[in-house]
Image (tube, rainbow, N blue to C red; front, top):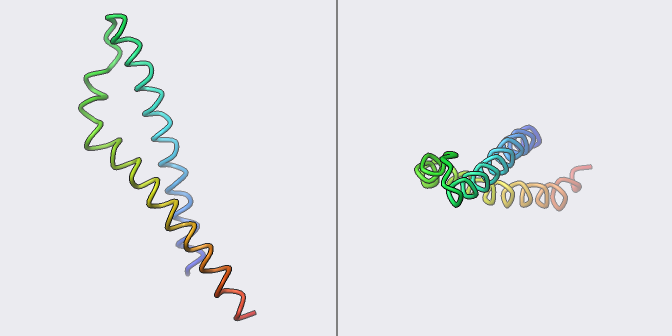
Length: 82
């Protein structure tokens, strides 16, 4: 059961990493467009920063920490049953 939870957590983290990478790419493109006077979605990105992208980064860090702790816990205490 614990292994299945860690597997799903890893899958969630992979999806979250892609969301953060896409958000960063959008940010870079929108920022260049804003500096050149071309509307490339800066206002939309900025409106989505607090409700979407900021929590996604927090979930990424928290999930990575929980995944690491779970794997360390399994290494330390999971081998005793073998």
